[in-house]
Image 1: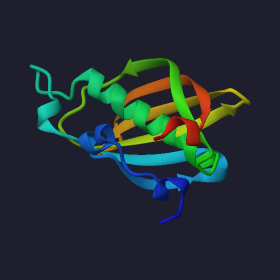
Image 2: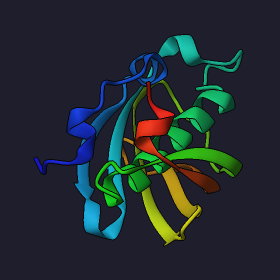
Image 3: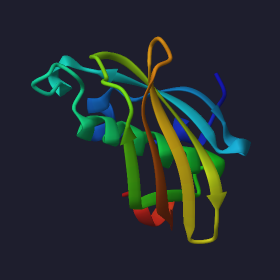
Image 4: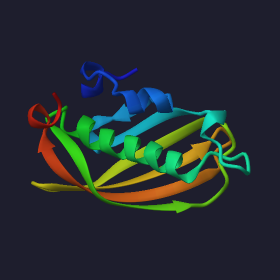
Length: 139
């Protein structure tokens, strides 16, 4: 597996809860693939992973795309995030992919999507995020 700036960052509790794990990355392209555990405990009354949990997974995919692209120099603080839910997410493995579409001096724009094991697109999102020096953002 490719080495990225994420190798030197301790996983926060929210990422651990989601079962976050890096699957692949192309730092120069600002692209990442992240694996998540769609736990049964995340389910809504219909038995599908609740939309808020899917949004958290998308957020936790798009931010790392910027982090790896900037070699860990910049951390993101979400300004806006628009999520589209396309298919119900059954509990089980979920894969997120994100790509930085524009990296400015103070704001980044990123697109992301979540897929089930069989490749069904579950949700998509776009975000605009304020860029913060990592040393000032992470304690």
